[in-house]
Figure 1 (cartoon, helix red, strand yellow):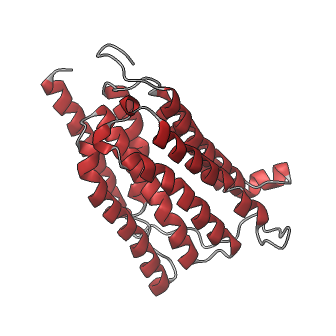
Figure 2 (tube, rainbow, N blue to C red):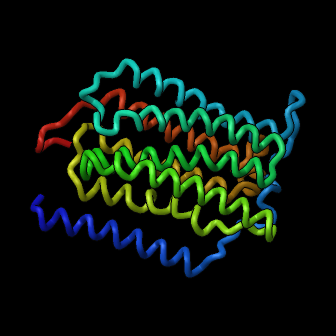
Length: 261
């Protein structure tokens, strides 16, 4: 990749981020639906309210534990050492998402949703910064991580505060936490050379997450169709499976040569 081509690719990513931010600002406030907390499956089992929506978060816990164990035993040549501390944050974020989402679904409300969204934010940003460092520049994810985490957490808090004031919290800042990585990641993987093998596993994870968002948006329809499990619970399972794909990719991969992928 020539230096000019490299800067064109970087400029494209920056331009997309600017356009998305401008659109979020233009369309703000962006609010969630009025029946957001009214999930299709609200059955109580074993004395646990919304049992399936709570227990379907279990894959986050399992993948997070497996990932942390893998990080402690995996050879360092399969990791970008300049973001070495971000890998366990990703898996730790999955564990925190298990507790945050489980706590939220016991009694869905705005405060608990804020506590649910914060670990999701940390996990998303950690993965995004890892990919930036592995594909674009080793120091990029390291330098971006802390300010991105601060922005992400503040965007969730801003939504919660605006929700307590108006009853319809503004998601315009928070939505960028997921939207920018979702659009950037396939472009980064397609436009830049990876350091490690099994780079396609990132794309598999992205596809699993997009399926999860589709299931979430069809919560009632899937529950009516399947009867035992709702779209929102399927979302948890698919998102957890996406984390498992990341775990598999990292456990199998090795550093590649300049011509490898």
